[in-house]
Image 1: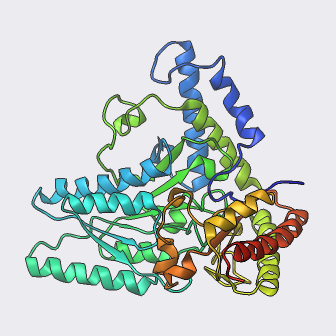
Image 2: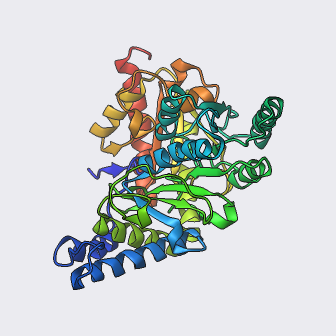
Length: 407
């Protein structure tokens, strides 16, 4: 029985091309890029080439705008904490930094914001609509209130940062980041987007989006785990999160994970080669799966943007649902036994007894949200895979209801 891996939003398998690119730096070309001898210089050249590739694929103007990190969580923490420190450096330790984010961000953003609140940072969490989308009017309102408060205090300081994700990792909704960034800039605030779930799956151009900072992670697009990047627009600098050596131009200490960096660059280059065609093919198969499940399974509802969704509305690979009278984690276990790897939502929330914060922010009642199911398709998904999912998922939902005594 073929096993269908439908949890690609959690992580993706390493592509053979990425592994091939990494292998020399895991074996004989092991020099430290910070050295000055021949092997170190070879490593430094490879590091520079990978940085240039990443910059080109992301639309960055300069290679030096790319900083390598250990992954999306570090990148998110760095920009949030760095923006708060940048604000205090500019306006004094007594000044209160204000960060604006959304209620459906990844926990790397939300938990860091909670920590910053305990340190005196003010955080505004924007609401979303029933599809999981942040409305630009909500951001305009929050920043107008910020400006009025600052004017009343006689300080007139802008918000320290606006951080809104590019695409949601649970329901796949794509946010209107370009419009949101324009609003932030009109109020003098820098804009960051967590693009971890988007890069490698939809076109991402930092200049077109007009963002000041962007986070990404290699393992979401068939690169290795433990490697990511933070784009920082030239002229927008933040204090380091990790102090130590002079790596990453003194902004991020620690010997570079050269094999990981080279593998990530190779994986992103491969993902971008046929991106438009892949998006169309994958979204067509996704819509066929969604249509079949909604038609043939009682009490199942699509979450996120409706179908047929435009390529600007929903990630091509994510089909997300709520299932009435079903425990989501029980369903995932049954699917695994039936040969399907799936998820209830974010991998970072697995084991939590609380319903998805994304679904509850979208107005879905907690009992319904506990029946969440996310199927995230591989880049090489086939019609045969969709046929197997269309057969196995309904069977497992019926079994989950029988076990729970709901049917």
